[in-house]
Image 1 (cartoon, helix red, strand yellow):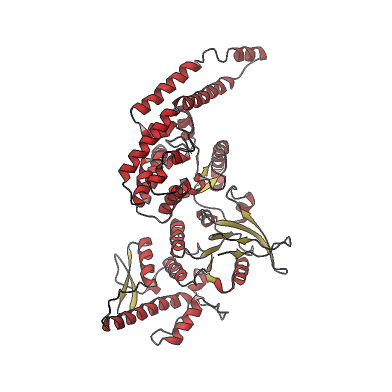
Image 2: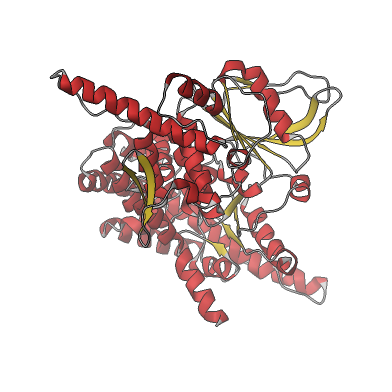
Length: 529
């Protein structure tokens, strides 16, 4: 659904957005809540507000929005005699709405069965809540007994949901709450991180969004961790609010930008380690993929390789101030093992494939997608493997030339980066710079190495040295998996990861193993002991 944004301080009208998720971020007091209320006002009967902070507390008299949880509760008690009128908070009201629907469906089911009809037991909102709740809290089971909703953990007797912790109540409130939003609603969530542990923020809200794919989610937050977790969201930074004129100073944070410095100074910073990456352009595979592969990090796109290396170094130098770990990721491209080891020693992770596109071609990833699409995973992979090796065989000379050029250039850079006492010494050094450089011999050695990869059908080694942006398309992996193109192939990978599909761990572990990131961290821990 298209939403209208508030007016800007510069007098221009607000933009219209068709994004499915919008994250509004700003410091406390910047005017985020009023910003959200203005979006709600313009969304009219489609606006639906959620706030766990307010839902768990007694609220003073206030306006009841049409279609809100409270409005639906008032309608329920008007038509039902078995719903309690003693519900002091919105959380209580939501629990009774869930049970009210459960009772109505059971009565209808019993009535149809008595008539002799063949009917299925209808699926209720509570069924959907229970499924997601038990996925997030596998040790806490949701029970329905004697007309009551109960929770039971492994080491306790069943208890009333009102005895849950504030964080658990917030999870239950958000899951159930979105199911009561009207069709095509604009669901505005105030402080979506409130009461919640950061370790579940991303997966929880990914799952909640998937419950209501017809709705637009607008998050109002000051938490940079949460904002960074909404990978495909349109992000808006609210700087300030002019109450007299009802206008705001705000800007879009584009996919091609890292968060601006002013935002870091304005907002309480993240307390998670930082992972700097190369991707920066809109639609970059790096930016979309890595947050799902490395959920323990805040992923920050910086653009080029040199920026990643410099930012990782600079951030590490300031560790005594911010106490945060920083890591970087750069493509392998045509780097030698010596170069790779040097970067890894500086906390820059380099994959065992040439570039980020090749991660999509890992055996574990291909097979996971094939299984998700109901294809024969082994057959699909073998065909793709043959295709990639054949493509590489046709390009051995051109690929070897690229590797030769890279190594010669790096070798010359090392040689030229020496200290000289006078210009004559430097001039003599330059004159003889390539005397011991056997370009043809190096090229032939690389060609022979590449031909050995082809002869041995060494797929992993091919992925390690083969730079070819069109590999995904030309390998026919998309068609073999029943997908139209590379974008659809990437999208299904992201969907599997976002929805935590059973194949998600296969994809995640395959890609992490390719970086040797866990091995490196274990090595660092041993060195620190």
